[in-house]
Length: 454
Length: 161
Image (cartoon, rainbow over all chains, first blue to last red; front, top):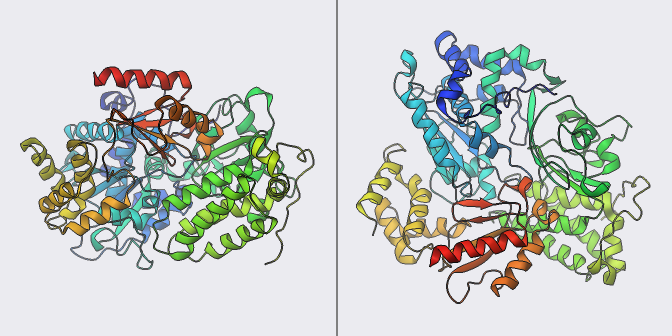
C-alpha cells in the first residue's frame, strides 16, 4: 500500500464531522502553527516541502505565497479555488464532501501564514450540495474556537465564506475567479498585475486549489523536510488522482509520486485494469487539456524508461512524446474508443466554455469543433486535418489566459499521435460513421506523425 | 419580491463582503432568485435583483447571460442536465441522452407538453468517475442506465402529483 497523507484517515467513520476529525488529531497542525510558529516559519516549512500547486499548473506554493504584497493598512485575501471543472477531475469534490475539516484547517494555517482575515471558498455552482457540508464544518470549527475572533486565544481572526459559482469552466482561472467573486462575468484579467499584488477588490490575493491548501495540514504535521521525502525528485509528496473512463475501478486515489503509470492503471490498489479484457488504447493523464498519449508512449517514455506518475516523468519528451500531470484527471480510453469523437467532445467543451474575450479562442474553438464534427460524421476532407492543426497553432499562446492553450493542446496531440485515425475517417466515411478505427494498426508502436508543415 | 426570510438571507450574503462591495453578492442572489421564482430569471426578476444590490440592471444581465446555470427562459419542473463531455461519452452518455429523448419524446433543449421535464445537455460536471450522469436539481444522479432513468422519471412524476 502506498503511503497516504491526505486520505490516511478517510476510512474512519464520521471523519466528516468535527468531533471525529478532532479526536483523530484534527486541528493539531493548526494548533502547532498558530501557537508555536511565526508565519515566516510556516512559510519556510511549505517551501521546504516542495509542494507544487495541485490545480494543474504545478507552480511551487511556497514561492507563490512569498510574492504576496504587504502594503500597510490594506487587507489581504486567501481564495480557495474549488471551481474544479477540468474534464476528468473530481478529486476536490471528494475531499470537500468527505473530509471538509481538512480543508478548513488548511485554510486556517494558510490564512495565518499569509496574514489574511477573510477567506473565500469559490466552489463551482453545480456542486450545489457541498456548500451545505462546508458551511456546517465552518460553523462547527467556529463553535470550537478555530474560526472567528481571537482564535484559540492567539489574537488571530479569520472568517471563511463559501461562494457558489454558476457554471463556467473559465472561473477556475484565478483572475476570472476573482472577477466572478466580484459579481462579474468570468473574463480573465491581463497579467501583470498579478493577484498577489492586485487581486480581489484590488487587494493582494492568493488563489490556491483545494488540494494544495489541504496538503498544508500534513506538511505542518510531519514537517516540510519529511514531506519532501515522499515522492520523487521535484514531485514531492502525494497527489490525488481522479481516475475515470474505461477502467475497472474509477474513483479518487491518493498516490505517492513514486509509482509507474502502468502500476496505477493495472494494479488492484488503483484502477484495477481495463474492463472486458480490452486493451489500452490511449490516456489523458492530467485532465482534458493535457496531451493525449497512445499506450506505448504512455507506459514508456521515448527513451524507453518506465513512465512514472510524477510531474517530471509525465512531461518527459515535451509535447512531442510526453504530456503533463496537470490536475490529476486521469482519463483512460480502451481499444474500442474513437479518438476523433473524443477530441470532438473536448473541442465542443472548450468552445462552450470560452469566455469570448480573445478572438483566437472565441472563433478558433468553434471552428475546430465544426471541422471535427464534419470528420466524425464522414464529411471531412484530407485538408481538414491540416486545417485543424493550423487553427490550434494560431490559438496557442495568443490569448489572455491559458484556456486557449488548453483548447489547442488536445487537438494538437490527437493529430500528432493519431493522424492515421483521422485519415481513416476521411477515406472511409461510410465505415467511420458505423464503427471505430479500433486497434487495426495499433499493434505496432505508433509513429509520431509530424503534421505537414503549414 | 422575496419573502422576509429571503431578504434576510440576502442581507446575510451581502455582509460577507467589505462595505460597498455588495455587487459580489450578485451570483448567490441570482441563485436564490432562480430557486424562488420558478426556476428561471425573467427580466423583471433581474431588475429586482439589481435594485436589491443597488447596481444597474445591465450589470445583472451581463452576469445572468454568462453563466450556464442561469435559465433565461422558462424550464420544466424537473430539468435533466445530462453530461456529454469526454469521460461521460466514453461510458455511454450518448445512449442515455438518446434514451431520454425517446422516452420523453422531446429533443435536447425542449420541455415536455405537461411542463414537467426539460432535457439539457451540459459540459463536464465533475463526476467523471461515476459516469454517465446528470444533474437533477441540487443533486447528481450517477451511474445512469436506462432502468435508472425510468426510475428517476417515475420518481419525478409521483413527486409532482
